Length: 91
Image 1: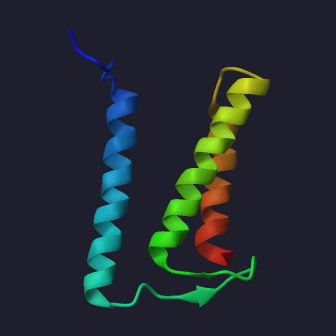
Image 2 (image 1 turned 135 degrees about the vertical axis):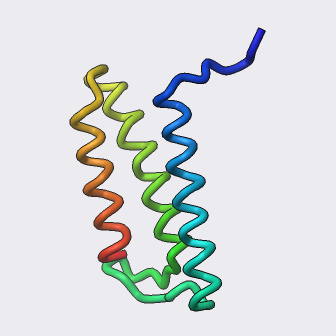
């Protein structure tokens, strides 16, 4: 008996998260310091901070969508991608 249902969408989610962390690790090795900058919210953030904010915000977007509307989840996916783009571009 397994404790988690490993489906292809679940596997792709984890592969995506670990791939993003791998890319950030390579970028950190190439140019140390995390590329700090002051964004639209007035926060000084690094690449890792922006990844964390985009993942956390995306989780809240999906949970709110499920709570208010249920499935399908294509609309919150588009909203989450827009949020992540905003985080890496302006925050």
